[in-house]
Length: 124
Image 1 (cartoon, rainbow, N blue to C red):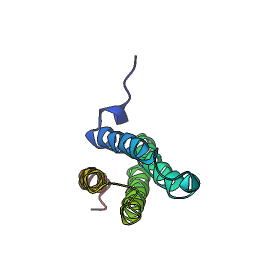
Image 2 (image 1 turned 90 degrees about the vertical axis):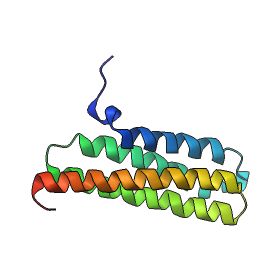
Image 3 (image 1 turned 60 degrees about the horizontal axis):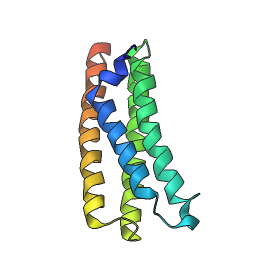
């Protein structure tokens, strides 16, 4: 089986773990949130991984940067939804902190990946 470049990236692997964590911890959210915060946080989590995969496969550095910026925006959407879910007591403090830690890790790596692409394009 062929392994694609994005699959080797630690940032994609961590974002994938974050997405799994989100799915596992939103399955018990209230049913009336299915099309609200549950859907929103899951779609944002998927968006992170998809944009890393798609962006890193682009030919131009400018396009790569744009997709990483979109992934970062989706990551902030995940953080926002996580904070709200914690406020609504849908998440335990322990789970909230676990998700928040993973968000911090992915944020750091996305920032560094973007800087790497900027350096290659001469924009940094």
